[in-house]
Length: 224
Ligand code: ADP
Image (cartoon, rainbow, N blue to C red):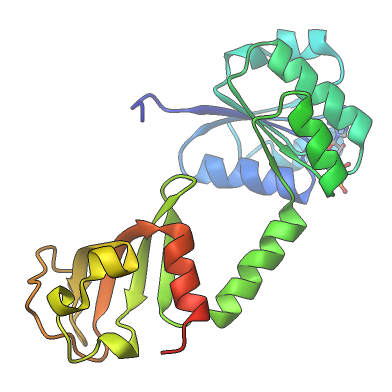
């Protein structure tokens, strides 16, 4: 990953777009926020680096904003396919390497991918899945996706691990997890060197790097 600070532009400042824009700005990133509705622009003006009224279906307006220089552009127009399509096409035409678009259904998603969006999110669907998983999570406390396949996970020691060692459990090959650190029961501090012969106690927490799918399946589906 490059050290250069990424620059983001968000087009469409409904709830989804403005939340992305203000979240990125709060994390210290440079964010240009664009909407054709001046009310939406004014609402976010104090939060982001720059907020501008423009129509993203007009490539010349986008060009004059320098959209082509951004690393990532988020097209957060979910309800109007034509506007969304033209915006994605324009942004790609201007040379933006990564365009994330929002779609309200599967058909919109397929069309937006076809015309060049690099990633399309269906926010309602993805949120529904996340909420469902959070309701049935047994041991996972937190999960950070590193890329499409791997995540770093904080988890409670599953009941079936208690009284055993990482060595006898053969965690790496049996669970496809690499243990990075341990937080011993009732301790605050994370300890980075984990002894494979340590006998796991109830309440121990592990920080692990693992295949997201394998770890999630294990957590949700297996009786412990
Ligand atoms: P919602 O307000 O329900 O999220 P949309 O997802 O359709 O509705 O639109 C999100 C935002 O995108 C709105 O604030 C709208 O003004 C803006 N928008 C729609 N079309 C364009 C466009 N061509 N250029 C810039 N912003 C647009």
